[in-house]
Length: 239
Image (cartoon, rainbow, N blue to C red):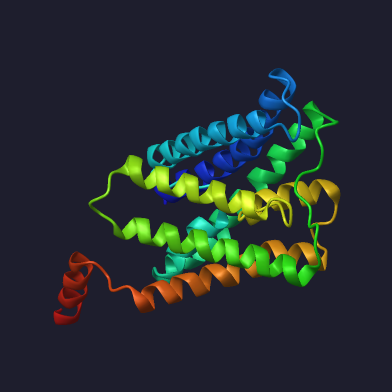
């Protein structure tokens, strides 16, 4: 029970830190360094810092024994796990990540009233849902593939995952924000008071969740489990 409490607290803190990190990166590049919104050097510098930031959060996840800031990350693992873990994820971890993001955004707005109000949907709801769904399907599939590569180093896995997330984010940034993180979007949507709209629920929650489930099902169907997992399954059957 204590370890589960620690994971939930870690989820809350990391989600709080994640929404802050994205704002601080933009402020550092555009306000402190003085790069314009569409300055190529500024964009390159911002993306480089974003990759370093993702390495930092990967370190935090390891240091907290599984803490996360994205509901899709924990949901993809819970789908393949047992029922108890699935219920714990849906009932405790995901709400903690949502509340962490909402709290983080509220503190940001209190500290910087003119900071803006986060990502918005710039296309119709159907194309928006398709965009977020495709982006989510891609990143979940990549993450599942990296998790099966036991021989790859942690640095290489984090490097590939970070570049993949950054690339997908850039592809979807002008359409939906390319967030692939329902909790983070929820924080900003709650601040705008449009978190219960059909657009928000369909594009940033239902589509990514469905894409995550489809990615896990497809991956498990097409990719056989590692030898050690097969041996464990045989042992359980023999017992």
